[in-house]
Amino acid sequence: MPGPVLRIMGHELRIMTSLVRWAARRPQGVDGADAVFPHARDQAALMYGFAFVCLVETVGMSYLLADWPLVHAVVLVLDVYTVLFVLGLHAAAVTRPHTLTGNVLRLRQAAHVDVRVPVDLIASVRHELLFTHEKAEGELDLAVGSQTSVTIELSEPVDVPRLLGAPRPVRVLRVHADDPRALLDRLRRLTRERTAPSPPQGPPPSV
Image (cartoon, rainbow, N blue to C red; front, top):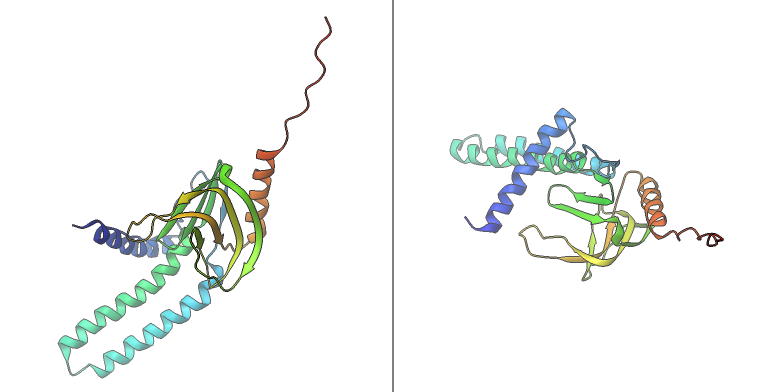
């Protein structure tokens, strides 16, 4: 089976298993993390609204196609899957927060982006609330509810593979967190510790 097909199937599976994790309140990849930064809150209303619209469409189509059982069954399966997929996208965001473990920052978006950034590569980090994003080479926007709140610039690129596996070197990451100040403060503290000057050495001992 071709690699891209396997990657799409894996993505669909992660979406659906996220529903189970969401119901069980079991986030993925947070065991042993020093800090966890949820980021799904600001998209919740949008995703619930979208799921409700899909549900209304499902009911309406079921009524309209009641006289065509075969077509009704096919459309019903597709509509139910669509509702589950929309809820699964939100569940994936809820159960896959950003994490900081040791000197590795893990940034995620739903079930299709999962990048580990060594803190040593962070050249600068700043609070920057943006609602519009223009695509640019070497930049990646992990927007939530069409917004990002923290911009991270790297000293050298990291690879963030696309959904079908194509490489994507990135040096600027724009992400969102429910509490962007907490993420910002933690990263600034780590980068300050890394770049702090060594304490001056005392005079050589007298002989």
